[in-house]
Image 1 (cartoon, rainbow, N blue to C red):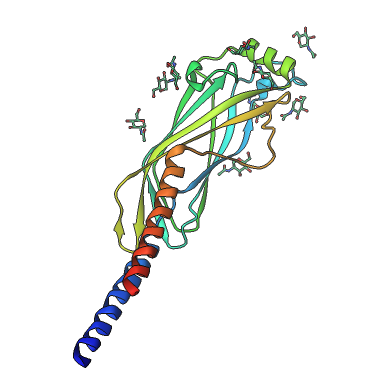
Image 2: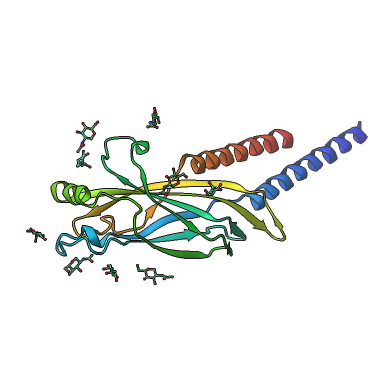
Length: 214
Ligand SMILES: *[C@@H]1O[C@H](CO)[C@@H](O)[C@H](O)[C@H]1NC(C)=O
Ligand SMILES: *[C@@H]1O[C@H](CO)[C@@H](O)[C@H](O)[C@H]1NC(C)=O
Ligand SMILES: *[C@@H]1O[C@H](CO)[C@@H](O)[C@H](O)[C@H]1NC(C)=O
Ligand SMILES: *[C@@H]1O[C@H](CO)[C@@H](O)[C@H](O)[C@H]1NC(C)=O
Ligand SMILES: *[C@@H]1O[C@H](CO)[C@@H](O)[C@H](O)[C@H]1NC(C)=O
Ligand SMILES: *[C@@H]1O[C@H](CO)[C@@H](O)[C@H](O)[C@H]1NC(C)=O
Ligand SMILES: *[C@@H]1O[C@H](CO)[C@@H](O)[C@H](O)[C@H]1NC(C)=O
Ligand SMILES: *[C@@H]1O[C@H](CO)[C@@H](O)[C@H](O)[C@H]1NC(C)=O
Ligand SMILES: *[C@@H]1O[C@H](CO)[C@@H](O)[C@H](O)[C@H]1NC(C)=O
């Protein structure tokens, strides 16, 4: 009787320790995707005070923020697509991209931020129509989409490549300047899905440890 009681206690504490170990493993292997945002966006040709379309360059600043406390990120080449939304009421796929850009892949240490300033002349763009929209509507909307794959560096090994596909609308005023003062975060379904999956996994694990320890 005493023997089996001792064995049972031993077994329980073994399982409990295993559960805790699994929890800590999971916590230390957990990764979060970088935060991508547009810090500034400038279209000099839409500046109504200037009233000229000679300068057709468009400028924007992309910021990449690795919020992981102890994991580095390897970025593959980053594909950027800039689209002009001719009519904000219509779905995105009714507008043609005005430019595709590529940012070279790089490594970003933990807790690091990186700026990748971009400037380009659109391949095709109906400037008169865009100017009409800003003058009648007071603003007009561009969209920036980002697609890449990232690997996380955990101590000495690299994870598999994970897709990062995000985007956001950028509203520009009569001066050709981004209206929102703060950075505009690029977001996407895949990132949200991944986050809720992780929360789900944590809850499962907690329930598992709880059941085992009883
Ligand atoms: C718009 O043009 C005016 C006149 O040239 C200039 O003073 C102003 O700085 C321009 N705005 C921006 C955001 O460049
Ligand atoms: C802009 O320039 C055009 C001709 O270049 C002129 O007809 C128009 O009145 C100007 N608009 C403003 C607001 O200065
Ligand atoms: C276009 O406008 C930007 C911002 O005002 C300025 O920095 C740049 O030098 C201009 N480029 C040309 C070719 O005029
Ligand atoms: C934008 O699309 C909506 C819905 O199709 C339409 O009612 C509206 O007239 C369009 N606006 C412009 C400026 O084309
Ligand atoms: C102008 O603004 C209104 C309200 O914000 C919006 O419904 C409309 O689609 C805009 N027109 C264009 C051409 O973007
Ligand atoms: C745009 O996407 C919608 C659904 O998201 C789809 O029904 C529609 O056919 C697409 N239009 C084009 C031109 O691809
Ligand atoms: C950008 O790439 C997409 C496919 O990824 C293509 O459909 C589109 O025509 C390209 N646009 C420009 C302006 O090169
Ligand atoms: C990017 O552009 C911003 C202003 O738009 C400037 O303050 C910053 O120094 C630039 N960064 C780089 C790396 O060129
Ligand atoms: C980026 O664009 C290149 C060339 O079009 C393509 O081969 C690659 O798969 C794209 N990357 C992502 C993550 O979509």
